[in-house]
Image (cartoon, rainbow, N blue to C red; front, side, top):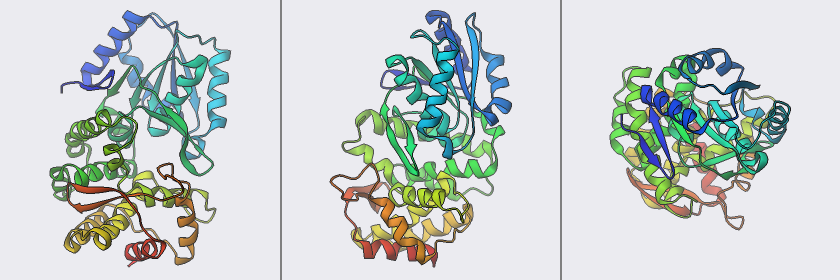
Length: 355
C-alpha cells in the first residue's frame, strides 16, 4: 500500500510503517521516547511495537486507564506529571499506542507539554484507524461532553498495522465499522455496498476497507482542515449520535455505548430527518435501518430519555450561536450541510429508531 500524504505527514501502512518509524528515529534521535498506552494496549500491543523499534534512545512507558471516562483533563495532568518526573524535554517523542482515546488525548498532551513536543500515532482499533488517523484533531472530553477541549495539531506520522485488530473484541470492530458506513453513505456508496454484502464480520474483509476510508477522510480534511465547509460531512450521524453517547455515558442505570453503536443510531435517525426535510428515499432509509440492525443490537431509548438527550445537543461543539446544525442526505453520496431541525421532528426521529 502506498503511503497517504495528509497535510505535513504521512500515513504509513503495514511493514513499511516500521521502516519509516525507524528512519525517523535514526534521523531525529529523540532524547527519550515515551510510549503512551492503556492497560490493554500495554499487554497486547506494546510487545508487537517493541519488536519493531530500532533505536538507541531510552524508552519509557506511561500507562493510563482504558475507557472514554478517562479521556479528561485529570488524565492529561497525570501524563504531564509523569513526563515531568521522567525528565521529558522538548526533544522527547511521545508515541500514542491505542484507540481514539489514546491518540486524541496523547496528541493533546504532546501538543501542550512545553508548548509542544513531537508525537506519533499508532492506532490499534478499527475506529481509530479510519477516524482518528487523519485530520489533526486532538482533545479530551469535558464531563460527558465529547471533545470539548482540544486543538488541531499534526503528528509526525501515523502507522497503520492491521495486526493490532487481532487484539480487540468484535464489539470494537463493529464500533469502527460505523465510521466506514458513514463514509459509504456520504462519499462512496461502493463501501456501503460491500458492507451490505458481508456474510460475516472479520478482520480480513474489513482490512480491505481501511485504506479507502483513510483516503476519503484525508481528501475531506485536507480540503477543509478547520471544518469551515466540506469537513462537516464527517458529522453525519454524529450530531444525535454524540448526544446519545453522552447521555448513556452519564446515566448510572444504563450501560455505556461504544462510539460506533451511538453513531449507528445517529445515522438511522438522521436518515429519517433527511427524508422529512430533503426527500431522501424512504426505501433507502429502510435499507440503512435494516442493514444496521443486522450489525448492531437494538438499544432501548425510552421516551422519558428524549428531553435529556436533546438537551445535550445544545453543547455539541459544531453548533453556531446556539443553533444545532445537521448534515443530512439527499441521496447516497449527496448531502446538505448546516440543516436546521425543530424539536418535534427530532422526537419523531427517535421514535422512528425505536419502532
